[in-house]
Image 1 (cartoon, rainbow, N blue to C red):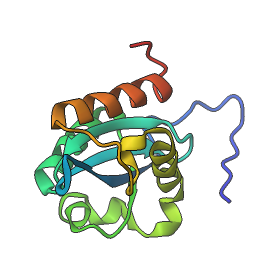
Image 2: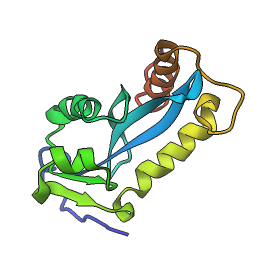
Image 3: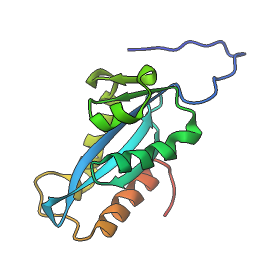
Length: 148
């Protein structure tokens, strides 16, 4: 457990100290048509910062990275996927499961609440557009509090 203690008079530092990034597998139509949810959360608060959908390719990660630029993230915590290693600065990138537990827990919550994300189910998306819309609406409602 890590604890950060600050005096009340001190101002909070600019930007986000650490962000956890990860991708989560699902499929559209059948399991050969894979679809990935890439997202990032603030490691301290657990708040979702940004998310995007696509294949498990560098181009999709770069879309997520672009969405994260305004947050001023100082350090990134990820698993060992090579796209992270290729596109994140080594000195600001920490690899390992120990620092990605919170985002992995968020994956479990998503899989529990959205039936089309479970691995063995008869409920699945038939189009990529509807798949992304349903998951995006859920995230916007429960993570960002938006009434959509």
